[in-house]
Length: 205
Length: 200
Image (cartoon, rainbow over all chains, first blue to last red; front, side, top):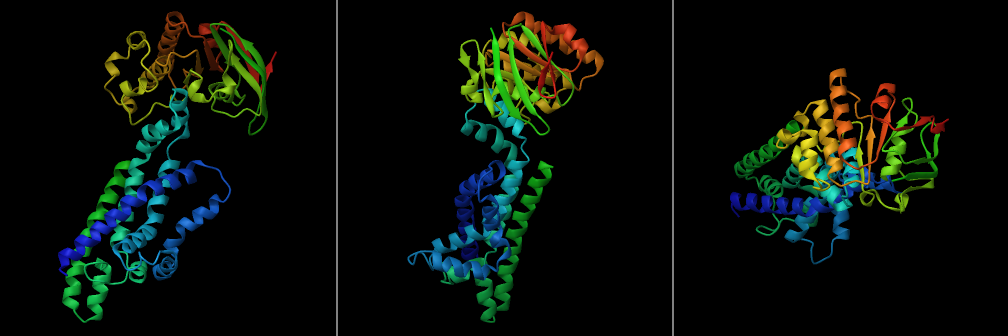
């Protein structure tokens, strides 16, 4: 498998994972930011868990939860990336929603707007830059995902081998220079993602 | 056009807001010191605060049974709360375009329509917020300290616009203030509020 193919596969999987994660992550972030409900602090803690747990442990849990037909397929790669990226997107979006003054939403309601319109025309646009920063960070995290992926998706060339897994594989096989080529490519992609994130955060501030 | 607030009760941080009142003047001022519960009363009328008990009716419409979006109450909050990501034009059209040309002319905001709201002066922001509320064809207009944060010459000018709105549009107003001069300039009737109760 060529370096370009590995990088392209990883970018596609990370993009898909991020895209699939955005709607539920925004919904959860909005509920955490605006809602008062029982069990909210438990959910907040659960959301943060992948940040502090060893990724391998998360992978082991996923191995138990993911259906057999999905394990060791590209779908498992996407699931592992989604789980590991979710804290970045949910937490950034929650903070972004909290920073939108509820007064704007209230006044929109007095102007006749129903809740979906308030969300899509007031809350979401005002929170967008903060959310975008979190999405880019989540995407970058997905690109570099290793621990959970190796357990739940394995290392099947052309089917589940991501950038991080391929680097590890090449080092294990003693192909150091080939590993370094991938590291260089990975640094460039990750640098681009973080740079975009910083830029969006600075524009917001 | 009569607004009846019947046995209203809302718990606030330091006291309960408890109000019963009938308001039928063209402009009724709600007058009282800071922290008297004036803004909370406007929020309750607009449907932005849950009532612990009581009923609010406007003519034969029970407002307190309706969600905020169905009340047709124009609300100009103290901080204006203009949507910062929208132009003046998109702000004022957010709730409707009723009588748009006339409102824009009376409030003299035609030259501002393409501008972003964050670039407006304090007086311009007040006029745009007023236009946004009027374009929904409200049955009642709530003005929360509309001259706050403006210096003296600007206060006089914005007051002239408010008087024009009073005279040109057939919309009753509740006007929250703690300034005696504003009472004299615009109010037909006064409800005095102190510590959440109507002072006699």
